[in-house]
Length: 306
Image 1 (cartoon, rainbow, N blue to C red):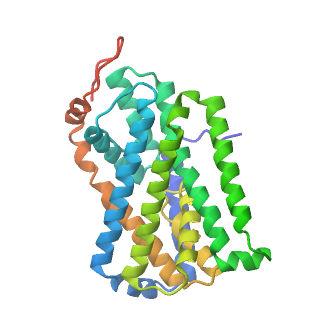
Image 2 (cartoon, rainbow, N blue to C red):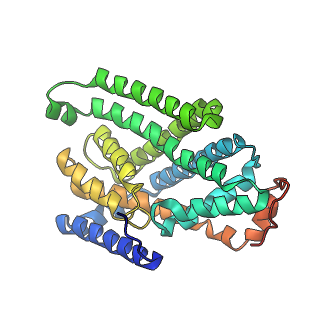
Image 3 (cartoon, rainbow, N blue to C red):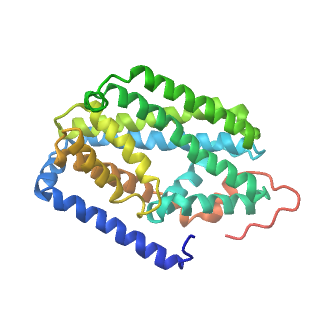
């Protein structure tokens, strides 16, 4: 049975778990070595990594806009992007990204009169479709990283392709069964999710170039994919600590330099934090943002009070 804890206590627990995860990480590595790797990073490649992350989030916002359109809610691209960025700002501090998603659902419900249920369904599906290509990529990279083949005792190329096919067909059938209104945009939304994952994998490669780290790039990318799944589990604040701990464990299992792996995860989090913090601008302009969304209020919609 789930514990009915006060919100402030849940947040406190997640802060403690984030701190504990980071403490475990830095017990196993030398912080000075991690700092040496980070401080020697090339600024040019860091900028490339940041640009790739920004692009990935812009594509993510478009995916959500496509899903909203399936429930009859048409948003213009620019205001939708601003709303998405504001959600990222809230997600940075609240566990699991619930805060930002909840705010978007609340605001759009008040602005348009769109019922909560389809808004929540679109937002939830946005999260699930974001995971789908991540699982595809995870299967592919598991097939091409030599250490994985050594563990299982045989190559798993065809098994990986079969797993991807089963995942795709199963996801489509589940969508048809439980959320049929989104079926027409399944392929386009999944393609956008694939682009998001591709851009973030490119970001990791850029971070590797920035710090000139040693090791098989495929192994780093595999660890990143696993850490991205772990970071979605809402037991830390904004994924802090969880991703670093995953990188540390993955580095040891795949014979990667632990200091470089942790440095990559820390820089990824710092880029996420810096980019997400820019969303604070829209928190001071919420009334203006509401007007810019430019959507028609449906009959019976409540007036907007921000």
